[in-house]
Image 1: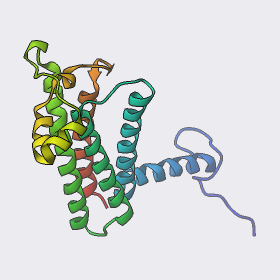
Image 2 (image 1 turned 45 degrees about the vertical axis):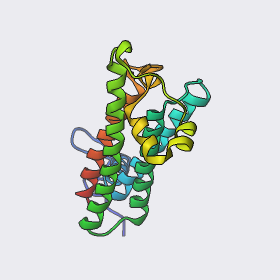
Image 3 (image 1 turned 180 degrees about the vertical axis):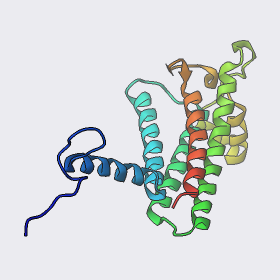
Length: 196
């Protein structure tokens, strides 16, 4: 008995008709889109974005010679924390919305902390040079001398080197891009919490 083809699988014969290859390409792109917008795929994408940003930061540090200031280091720690939370959410992939909401809350909390540090950093960069705080000591010295809580307080106060803009892309500095990314991570995590 010969195999009959349906109207959809016949060779392309004009507007509104697709051949088998067209359908395979469309279904493949729909599968990729479906994976990216699923919770597991979206969390994996968030993890890869965090790792990509960290890798670019280390590239700027070690290949281009840009030394990170204390606020940059705190933003890197927040990126690492958000990335780990995205990865754990992708691996665990809780079945219910409650579990997804908990992961989204953790990611949003870490990203909000990173956004707060980035906001402070952006503010320091836009403060006139004569009104910026004096340059402070290194992180090693702060932690060995003052302990973790006082060191964190002094770091968040900022120092002169945090106000220097060493690199820009499309006229935005690194802290401005990082702030935008943290806001994006919050929105992405909350979006994914509502997905299946």
